[in-house]
Length: 185
Image (cartoon, rainbow, N blue to C red; front, side):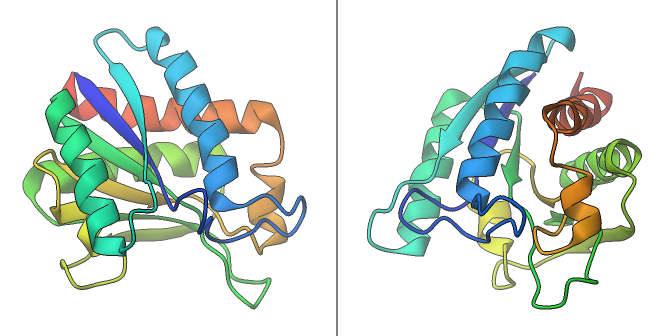
């Protein structure tokens, strides 16, 4: 099974920032993507490739271009990496966005469960979104079943504590790979 990992945001607009390290979503998730690729060999039948969104002048064109590359590679599923942030430090938890198609939903359920086990954060659940909802474009522009994950809040002490060590990033990487394996292998 070919799993595309799409790093959310891009080098110019890097997304939310972790309060503990000042690291952006783009930077932190680029590291997570490397770990996912490194760990994929431990999951028989799963092949991973990372794709980066490039600033091409518009958000819509940026997504069309990266998911065109995902489609050309022949991905059977895609997972876009993000993390949440909020002005209130008490906001915490793990959530996964799905388009609601049967395979996207199965993939989202499996990865959400695995992330909850790995991180031990509050279950914010699955969010079925439309094309026009926040995050929705990423779930509909490519051919493969897609999910968008928000494993933690970079503004929350609980979320930061669950993701601040390399070993915790490995647990999260394995959670994503295990969830994909359960559905597609």
